[in-house]
Image 1 (cartoon, rainbow, N blue to C red):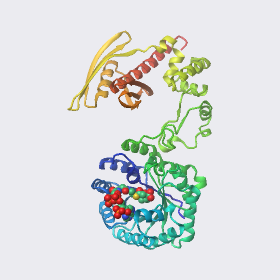
Image 2: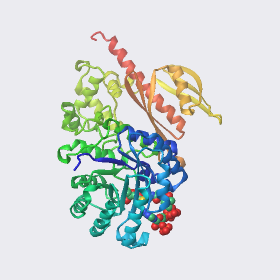
Image 3: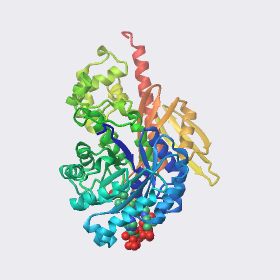
Image 4: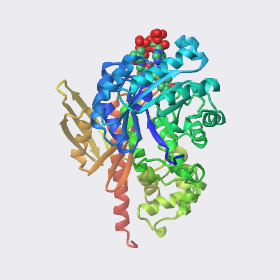
Amino acid sequence: MSSKVIIFDTTLRDGEQALQASLSVKEKLQIALSLEKCGIDIIEVGFPISSPGDFKSVQTISKKIKNSKICSLARCVEKDIEVAGDAMSSSDFFRIHIFLATSTLHMESKLRKNFNEIIDMSVSSVKKALRYTDDVEFSCEDASRTTMDNLCRIVEKLIKSGVKTINIPDTVGYAIPNELSNIIKNLFERVPNIHKSIISVHCHNDLGMAVGNSISAIQAGARQIEGTINGMGERAGNTALEEIIMAIKVREDILGVSTNIVHKEIYRTSQIISQICNMPIPANKAIVGSNAFSHSSGIHQDGVLKNRKNYEIMEPNTIGVKEVKLNLTSRSGRAAVKYYMDKMGYKDHDYDIDELYSAFLKLADKKGQVFDYDLEALAFFSKKQENAEYFYLKFFSVQSISNGLSTASVKLKCGKKVYTESSTTSNGPVDAIYQALNKIINFPITLQKFQLVAKGKGKDALGQVDILVKYENRQFHGIGLATDIIESSAQAMIDVLNNIWKSQQVNKKLKNLKKY
Ligand SMILES: CC(=O)SCCNC(=O)CCNC(=O)[C@H](O)C(C)(C)COP(=O)(O)OP(=O)(O)OC[C@H]1O[C@@H](n2cnc3c(N)ncnc32)[C@H](O)[C@@H]1OP(=O)(O)O
Ligand SMILES: CC(C)C(=O)C(=O)O
């Protein structure tokens, strides 16, 4: 049996089924290109019979993707198969994926057919699909609720009729790991021609077991795993491919298999898909969540700083994440505080760690998350200086007009002086206000993240803007909260500017002190 597991991505088909609005051709192509770059073996790009738009996107993607195999879904309906074959005809090698339910429940109450009719429909559909390609996959929909006798019978017939990949879907996420691996083992034991095809699984996450079930299927002999990036998909979603791929890599000792994936592309691909599909990734999501490689508690942070392996089972840069984050909260210890002070270039004799730590704890209890520049302010400013804000937005006005141009005017208090500036841009009102502010301050900053969330519901909701800005190789955060989202955006930038300013004052102060 091969030690390679084929990774079959259905983000553009099963994943897209779960979106509130379907994706455009351009968006689908962008996703397909990033999946190809990530080394996905087979990309299921759509269900072309479902709409002219889906047909067009399958057609467009088929022309562009060269290094992954393209696949499209079809029911056991002649027109579906014909349209799938036509949509992919410009691709050099493609797969048609046919499905039909085999469980008694689906046969009787959905398809209204008996099992013999299901076999006949399946076999004749495979023959039709083979006119377009020699690569036909067949899914026995709801396989995990199908009787073992029926499953073995239909699988044998399908392989005999030329199906290269037999997919065993846990369509409603009902199976538990041992059960699914027994189904696969039974197929290997009872279907005489089973070795002529690849066994695949396609698991849903209704009971949160999609990844566990897929892994148990690999252990029983499955060599194709179907899923989606970030686990998108019908209801609770599909098997999250990034989790399967990393489980295969990290636990190669037990699983003894590998994939063709370019691991360094995983994080980027996940981000692109999350953004295009407007499906935010939960912070604690395995592999790609923003907390997946961050450590928050003092004992873990101390352990990681001594040896990363103490609390990390994989290196973040394996999936393309650049940095491990140590969150500074009131659960952090001295080791993390010292780590950030070292990182900013301060020596142990520059500050008193016990004094700084106790000030840090008070701030962390008040503020929640503390950043490196907060530590600087705590270590080197007096209480009065620490709380003083240098920049203050006295006034702003923004005008956006239908030709796409936005103009912003600001009045900014900088220390004791007040300056006025304005700016016009086609990038929207927030950019206009940021440009006007920076005309006054002239800091070489780059906006790295802009996030707007509604706090509360309805018309009384406040808009909270969180931004992350790069300034001279350091990152500065800013938060703004107001009912007017333009004002909260401006306040977030003022917060950043004050944080940068404080950091500059610390540096000046240190330079001026004789002992330095
Ligand atoms: C488990 C899965 O994820 S399967 C994929 C699910 N994805 C989708 O359904 C998204 C795309 N679907 C669509 O665009 C539409 O449902 C279409 C174009 C496929 C069909 O639209 P309609 O012809 O209007 O049928 P509708 O969706 O109402 O009902 C589905 C029909 O397909 C039949 N059907 C379901 N599965 C199959 C199958 N594998 N083979 C043959 N017929 C099937 C159903 O029995 C039903 O037939 P009926 O109307 O004679 O009872
Ligand atoms: C078409 C099949 C593979 C499917 O999506 C399912 O059973 O969930």
